[in-house]
Amino acid sequence: MSQNIYDRDEFFAGYAQLRRSQEGLAGAPEWPSLRALLPPLRRARVLDLGCGFGWFSRYAREEGARHVLGIELSEKMLERARSMGTDPAIEYRRADLEDVALPEGAFDLAFSSLALHYVVDLGGLLARVSRALAPGGSLVVSMEHPIFMAPSRPGWVAGNVWPLDGYCREGERVTDWFTKGVVKQHRMLGTTLNLMMRAGFRLAHLEEWAPTAAQIAAEPVLGKELERPMFMLISARKD
Amino acid sequence: MSQNIYDRDEFFAGYAQLRRSQEGLAGAPEWPSLRALLPPLRRARVLDLGCGFGWFSRYAREEGARHVLGIELSEKMLERARSMGTDPAIEYRRADLEDVALPEGAFDLAFSSLALHYVVDLGGLLARVSRALAPGGSLVVSMEHPIFMAPSRPGWVAGNVWPLDGYCREGERVTDWFTKGVVKQHRMLGTTLNLMMRAGFRLAHLEEWAPTAAQIAAEPVLGKELERPMFMLISARKD
Image 1 (cartoon, rainbow over the protein chains, first blue to last red):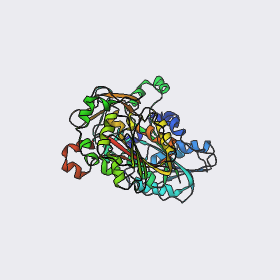
Image 2 (cartoon, each protein chain N blue to C red):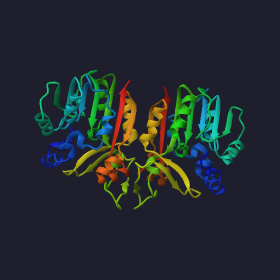
Image 3 (cartoon, each protein chain N blue to C red):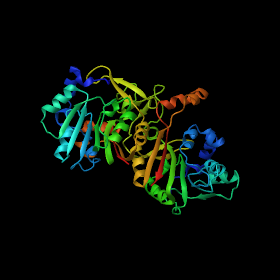
Image 4 (tube, rainbow over the protein chains, first blue to last red):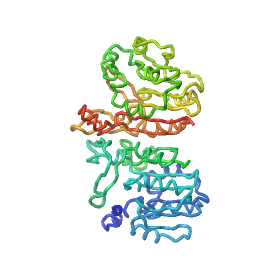
């Protein structure tokens, strides 16, 4: 069973205040880049891995998706997702990505926003996701970038220097983020891509997200994101 | 015309003393990992981009390659390569990777060791390399890792911390390495992979090279390489 920080009161209270929690997709600066990697959603059957408050699940429906299955471990998040509107074509299901059972060949898109870096057995999940996709189906995900996750002391030094260490030492990273002891899984970028290819995906695009000049002009604090990438966005296709 | 640091006397004198220059492939710690990415060389037609002293060109012939074309900008390096033995099936040619003309569909493997990070128009080169390969042909390359190249002050701080900055600011990086003002081209890892895919390559493997436990035991100074990757090794296949 995975760690379920999202159901801790202190975590949920903090997380719910984030701009991306309040405003949804529009509040996430990487969303325009992630959206650009999506296949057409019209009539698509969509799997939303770690769906959280359901922002993407609802977006997919607005864009014409035929059916959305949102998977989420946190009860609090599912409750919030369900409170934001009912749609018979969206099914929210409580399950752990480490062992969720998925129907075979049932989806055209598997999407995941900032959830896969919590998963210990990423290879196992990707194999199940690959089987759950129809041939030609797409995988579009965002994850925390390993440069962001690796350091033993993740925080700026001397203003704008990111103190990287341990990049090639894979495994757990424990940080405090709204709550104590949040556990993430550090994998080198190559490891993640190789797991995808081994699961039968053909890589299509890798974007180490950085803010645009317009985004920095509108929100100068984003400028620091040019020093080291916080997220990576990946699209791939099942052969 | 590219910068040709390798023909500066001071650079060449220093470079020629490196273990990888003296011992060849066996003197490069990443060689076992790079070799593992190679397709069978028997009867292969091989293109060696930035062949230097010709270590790989000769290795390919020993492994049964039918023909090797080694491209190198440095006259001094070509001279040394030619002095190390003549083989009618190895052709060394002086040319700049920025604009070298290559025959179409003429090779089964395009190989490059630590040269592509000097190339400004990498997309243009990859397009020419893609056309130079027969269908199903392989691309196997090592490059300096962008984590290694990005920083404005590339050097350890506080013992084992790598002071990363500017990762998302692509473009020239100028360092001193045996000579003043060595110019390299910093590209995010995603940019390099996307250029390969756009040139018609299907990615097969990405390895952010790190020493093995046995290598560190034999040469403890290599241990620091676990903090941040110096090289990346990529294999891909032309569709």
